[in-house]
Image 1: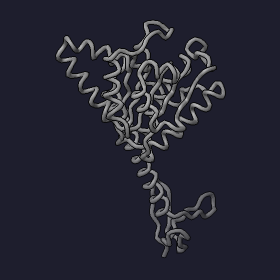
Image 2: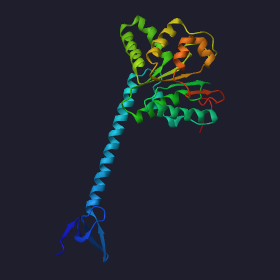
Image 3: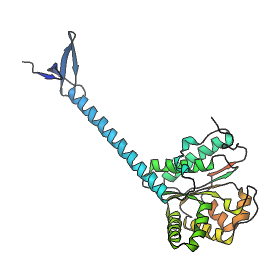
Amino acid sequence: MIETFTQYGKLFYQSDQQCDTCGEYMTGKKVEGMEKLFCSHCISNKKQEEEEEQRKEWTEKAYQLKAVNRMKGSSLVKDKEIFQRNLRDFKVVDKETENGLNIARQAVLAINDGQTAHVILNGVAGAGKTTLAMGMLKEILKLDVNKHCMFLDYQFFLEERRAGFNDSYLDKTVNKIAKDAAKANVLVIDDLGAETSSSEKYKQTASDFTIRELNSILQARENRSTIITTNLDGAKLRQAYGERIISRILAHSKGYTVTFKETVDKRQRPVK
């Protein structure tokens, strides 16, 4: 006797044919005089797998969001819009920017693999160095949500440090930022050298105060991955900060230096 049952108003029956995949008896139904067989067990299993995959995707996105929010919470920036940038926002307009994006991606994979990388992004203003640096942090967190990433606007950090001399609460806050910057798995030091000049034209060497602060962070980060953006070239960085600082910056930087010389200022001539 054929066992029949009704579901959603449609009549089904259990076939005597077995599924080639799971070995269970297949379910049949007649549609317009034709018999159609399907395995309800395989369909159910597939649905469960899809639901589990969806749950995993939602969980991963939740963890990534938490990691990004942690990065935002520990970072120090003047312009919060920086946090909206991603690697896909970095515009490739010439060989320099293409090379920069390739090196950035290589560095992300190396850091995720446990290697120490000091990435130096230097050159003309408006080439997208800050966007590239923030994009790298986002990509690193996609691969490992447990990494502590941090973004530090260095000129703003120094301004807050000085202001903290007369504000005990701010002083404690900046001290915590400095400690976090020293210990973060990956740190971006953005716009290094901006504090040495009052105009776009490079004028002077960094002050002893600036050098002490920078050296304190870099000394703690000798074996930690660091991304530095600066408008200064190697010679001007050396003049501004001295050999000790440069030596610490250049450690672990082989293959991870990007220089923009010819790229147009994307802020003045946006790329569509």
